[in-house]
Length: 227
Image 1: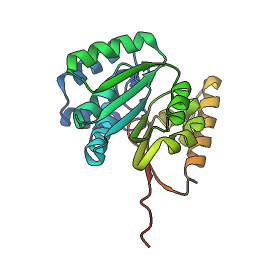
Image 2 (image 1 turned 180 degrees about the vertical axis):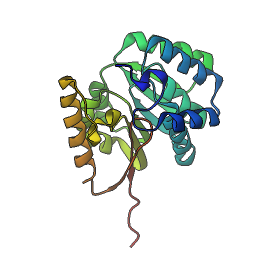
Image 3 (image 1 turned 120 degrees about the vertical axis):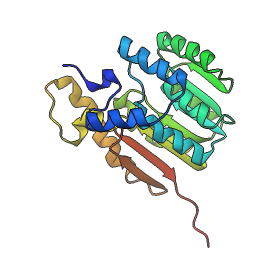
């Protein structure tokens, strides 16, 4: 089965709609190069339609410090770095092969505000928590079955004005009830459902789920009530 994903298109948004939007939205030349690379090598990246929203969110939040969990080949990193060049970005991934590709694209994009860490994300997060680090923006595009286990750790890492974004939370529409044949997807689907149910109950955060890309979830810390 050939997924739209390998054409940088969504499985949940009509192809003609998303194709039109992708043509309409202008992108950095390096990002277009990464899109071509992703199609040729069948490497998953943040879908361009979702990248447009990520760019807007970064411009609105203007985060001083960004944590990215899941560098991949650097597409979303460059989107965020270009959206707000003053931000310091810490990005982590355990896939050394993809990190090497990402670094080449970072060099091509002229990025100087990005620190790349080759590590297991949970190990890095534990270190950051121990050091008392806080981030104004956290972008998570990692192994989907791990999302429930990031929950409270992400909360603890967010600053008072912090926002977190999780990609792929609808997983090709399977989370919404779209049928699938391969049993190997069951674990991921069930864990994503658990994640969505858990995160909705956070008392100090507002949660927004959008049918964009492969499912975009935005978690925003609520402002303290004024007495």
